[in-house]
Image (cartoon, rainbow, N blue to C red; front, side, top):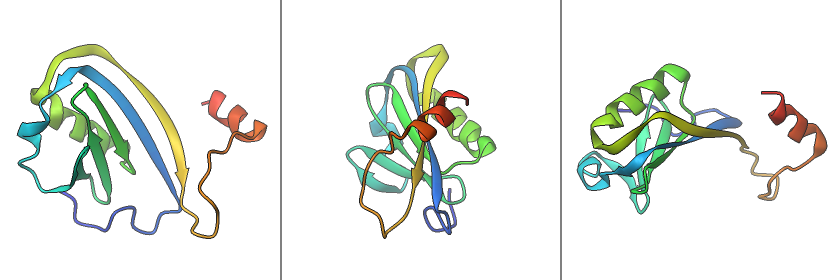
Length: 116
């Protein structure tokens, strides 16, 4: 599916979580080459990845809009009782090996998120 290295050359990655349906048949999706099995993590798009959970949710990392749409479409046959209007949340991840891991809750960053 993907050809490049994960998050190749990126300092910022968008992560989007989707609550797509009641369940996802992860076992059938495990047949693809996976990066991890619990949760199931697979390459997606050119240099992104996706984590797929049995509870009907998926988290997509570093995908362009067309790649995201294609991946979600690919997963449709494995989703039980898919929602007509799936819910989603988005977060921006910053890759900086010089900084400690943390969640930025600064007022400036929060207001940026609210305006999106």
